[in-house]
Amino acid sequence: MSDASDVTRSMEATGAVAASYAARRRRARPSGWWGVSLLICTEAALFGTMIASYFYLQAQVPEWPPPGVDKPIVTWPLVLTGVLLATSVPLFLAARAAKRGRTRATWLMLALALLVQCAYIGGQALLFVDDYNKSHPTENAYTSIYFTLVGLHAAHVIVGMALIAFLLVRLLSGLTNYRLVGVRVVALYWYFVNLIAVPVVLTQVSPSL
Image (cartoon, rainbow, N blue to C red; front, side, top):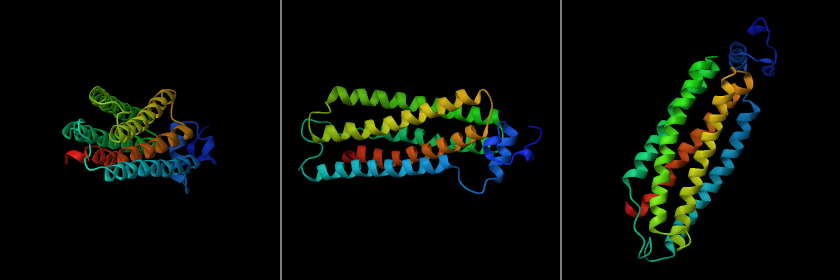
């Protein structure tokens, strides 16, 4: 393809310059963006149900957590959530760099986000193991909903990390329209993961507040 202006359809954009040109001329959201948006709606409903279930179970008992179960720690979950929220910045910069056709900058921002995410999930794993050693998920209603909610969010973080890792591998061979859209939709998914982390962690530590 000799020139970016020769691109008449976004699927023909197989280079960084052409992909950037097609993205800037696009008037509607790509199909992938709408697909992830619908996924986010269903996931938001799932988390909303889980959080509502947590407080419903809490309302059924006189003491929460029940006797014999330690109240959750507050400091480290909040610190880790702050770290997780900070990863929205490199994802935003990666999406913007991709739209401008800057493949290297896109890759570096994604790699930075993944590095910080690895630190977050490592810290969460340590907290999870510590909680598990203190009480078992099947011990009572509190431990059941607690581990389910925390584990569900951790699973979404891991999915997001896997998507970013996939993009990093694909971007090694260059930026195309499909990869540019991939960066944008993964960034959108990650914004949701970070946004839902706030009510999840507040619910998690609420007995200690």
